[in-house]
Length: 341
Ligand code: CUA
Image 1: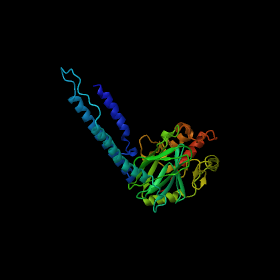
Image 2: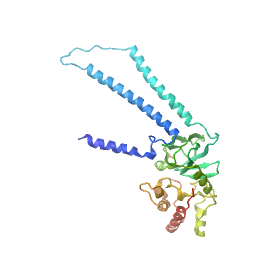
Image 3: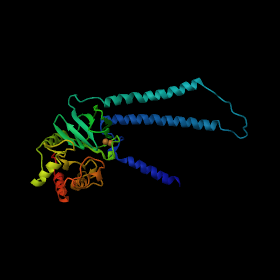
Image 4: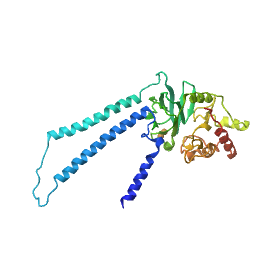
């Protein structure tokens, strides 16, 4: 009976691993397939070792136990060359069996495919606490959602604007660090299945590290082309001219919409079509549990960005002179800023 609460806790713990969209056990592309293969190989070897060691231990315990009436010391054995060679050679062999495919795959997944023909080039920049995606082949920049066509290999160049982050999409590939020393890391992946794949920052990077979530969205090639087109369309601004002025002066000094604005904050073009606000507030358009309408999420964010993501660099709009009513209007405008694809 005492075991029951323990078992319950254990199954609760395991159920935490049940997020299929965030699991290396649910690979959706060749890189993740290979990584799962490595996990299976190492777990099989570990299970084998555990079984053999426990079997020997059990055998020794039974066979050489002290029998009733036994008084004298058993024979003491010291040193055995043959045994020592065997138990050095076996682990060495196991390590080699593990190391060869692991090293092969580490080098393969970090290979620089940037210049290869046909790849989709994406520059990934980690920021505290959001992700920027730049497509030099199309002259398009976006944030929080990396859009990719299915069936086309994506070659990434990874860097950071501030501290160390790590780019990880469990069901596609990863993890790869973004280094503050300026070195650029490479990785690549692809998938044949359209869908949304959740990504996480996998390197502790500050108070909101745990909220540094992003999406990789794989769509059909023609939808990707439409997305590029509509992203490049001229900026849409709030209809109210006074509000538009205020938006330009305050928001567009860091953020960009269409062909206007700055580059220190996340690009807001088409933010109404994204599955999240700020990477973590789920928009109801994707039907996720606990999600809210885009506008509500935007209001929540704009009312208190520090509450949603502590220590992020977004100033409080109210400190910039935005009234509650204007925040509602900005949220309304952004929620309706959608891309057609
Ligand atoms: Cu960025 Cu953790």
